[in-house]
Image 1 (cartoon, one colour):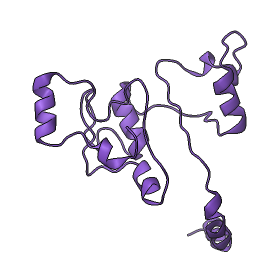
Image 2 (image 1 turned 90 degrees about the vertical axis):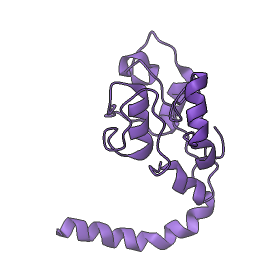
Image 3 (image 1 turned 90 degrees about the horizontal axis):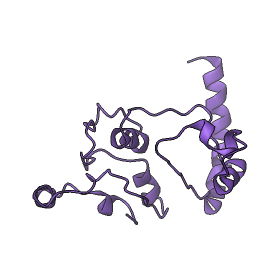
Length: 155
């Protein structure tokens, strides 16, 4: 362990009681993920022609990710990696229609356990397998493969 690491741990330990006292004023967390565009398609990143005032306001008052990249070229494996912090291959999320296995935890689950109201919303977040044909839906129901309604407060 380097001196730098020991100093960081020491400062963190000193700040711990302050952090515990501030627990009542926990921040709200809102993540907005969009598909099929990159930095040049938002006003917050300097495009003067595309008007994105609400996203620009979030970027100005919240946290902006200037060096973000996706872990997979498909949205479902990429979202699974984002939600779990793990490689899509390591968690068997390599197909567009695969449900996230119940034993693979997301970062939202500890937040929910600590009292946050958690949820996912949008066009279709796909981590429960997406829109299914009746035969596939029967299999998902039989083996309880759709798990997000049990993991989160809102789906």
